[in-house]
Length: 402
Image (cartoon, rainbow, N blue to C red):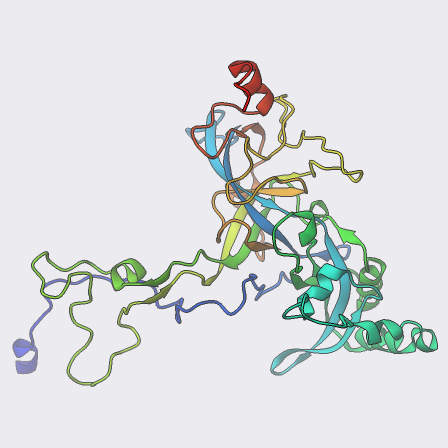
């Protein structure tokens, strides 16, 4: 009792600043979001892809009518921010089979397609331009013709016989987007569904060297998850990085600091104490993003632009999803796109991994049908008076010749 009486107490108490759940706060190893958990496999559905990859183009806003009986916003119009992710069809170029071990999954066999495109093979080189032979996968390709592809068939049979998990190897068609980068992003995508492994393997094999559209993976009104690397901020101090309180104005040697970084003993600084360091460029997974629209490409197979993928039943103006003047720091969206509610991790042009939800969605907002009334395509560079260039020309009349 006497000990309790003599002990001092803190004058102020507060929760700690910043979460320790995201340690270490360092730069991510990879620039592409990694799927660390996949949806549970079921045999009652057809074989299907559980993820996809796209490139963040930018943001705009939409208006829609809320369908939520009992809510004050029911049947009222709301304006919401949305993110546009350009998702050209992905190419299937291989498959990997995994067996379950006491230490987790282990891959035992990989089968690649016979022909890999240049943008895919670039991924296996540090510097494609400097390499002389560019012979990646040349020897593997020969296996298809040696002994009628016996080695390929043996690896396929091994997957069917032993494996419990099958993942397809797919790559993005980055050349279709028109970015400076020409090296495709390659990822494994788990195949769920199918009665048995043989059905899955045959399903993937039939898709080798063929494109898979985003509309076959996700649909409107679905809830999905995104994985990506956040926007990098560089080396930052404790006030910005951890959200600690600034010290009083008169503090000696600066006030954007932690007042006490620990007691005399133990004579070390604990890992829980906020310190300055790298902020941003971290790997983050965000769940429950609602798909407002899976849009078709503005450019058809012949290379002609139809420019009608931002029309709605209520807004019949012929316009494409690209705003007047293009998306800032990105450009023009010509390929398929997916529109998600709210913001998405990362900067423009960054690759975003999209995954089917791990949960069974039951909330009203998850099950709500979205009926878009209007998609804004005014310029995102300035005040944006006009929805299309035709509208601008009609309003402003002939402009001065350059």
